[in-house]
Structure formats: C-alpha cells, structure tokens
Length: 156
Image (cartoon, rainbow, N blue to C red; front, side, top):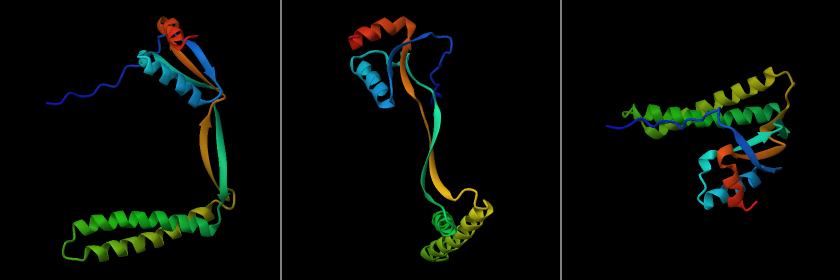
C-alpha cells in the first residue's frame, strides 16, 4: 500500500533575519549553495525578491502572415496529436494516411484561426513579446534562531 506524499508545511509565524542582500538572483542562490555545501539546514532559508516589477521584452513585429504561420505550426502539432489518437483506434485504415491528413487539416485550421485572432486585435497589438518578473534586490533570509549560525558558517 502506498502512502500519500505530504507537502512540506510552510509556517508564516516564523521570524526571519536577512543575512545577505544581492542585486541578482544568481548571487543569492550561490550563498544558499555555499550553506548547503557546508551541511547547513537549508530548509530554514528563503530567498525573497524585493521591488518586484514586470518586464516585457519586445521580440519582433507581428503581421497577419506571421500570425497565420504561427497558427499553422500549432495547428499542425495539434493535428498530429489527433491523428495519432485516431490512428491508434482505427486499425483498418492506414496510420500514416490518417496522421498526414490530420496534420494538413490541423495546419489549415490553425492558420485560419491565427489569422482571424490577429485580425480581431484591430492592430492594437502588432508585436510579439516575452513577459517576466524581476526584482531590484534579492534577500537571503534565515530563520532568526539559526541566523547567527548561518553567518558563522559563511564566515561573516
């Protein structure tokens, strides 16, 4: 009989002390890694991002043709998936034929939907972009009862 896996309990009552402050996440992560390498109980540590902001990187222009092409690609993948499913349950027909027609039909409908979806924006969003969250500062915090020990392990 299997036992259900319990998620670790995260208490909000525990007090934390900041032992380090960094401008980027990689440096904060490196400090936690140092503590881990020295056998410090890392379950008492958290990395906190302060000054969160949303960043959007514009990666290119979106035209009707590019929208249709992107839709064509996703439609083809969806068609392939559907073709494989139909092919598994239709043994009397050629698997390759079913998959090929599913890809073609999926690509056509994907291109149509991609084109129409872009057309529906009315030119208000004619670009592609990637969104991400970033912080101005990253704090390495340790439970207050273990903060002095963490500082001595780090030699600070």
